[in-house]
Length: 118
Image (cartoon, rainbow, N blue to C red; front, side, top):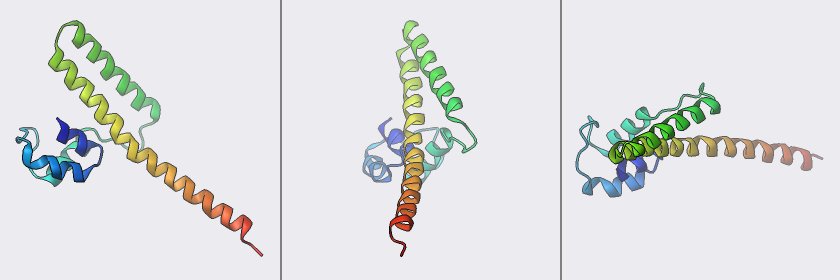
């Protein structure tokens, strides 16, 4: 569902916009903006210990299961599997951007030190 994708990608403002127009989802115990975001974070959380290889393996496995579901003409099941793939990939983006920002800040600090010392 769009609200789940927005929540899993960390887009609170989108969740707030979609919330009044979305019917409650049974799997989400706390039907609120915070509850939906918390549910999605826990559903597809990626611990810092997991390597990129494990994440790639998980995504590849879900995609493979999705292809098999399409072959069986289980389109609803395939859709759910591909939604999980997308949600997991989207949760990586803020993590990767955070890493990039930290590295850029470090590089800026190093450059400032190198070029601004008297």
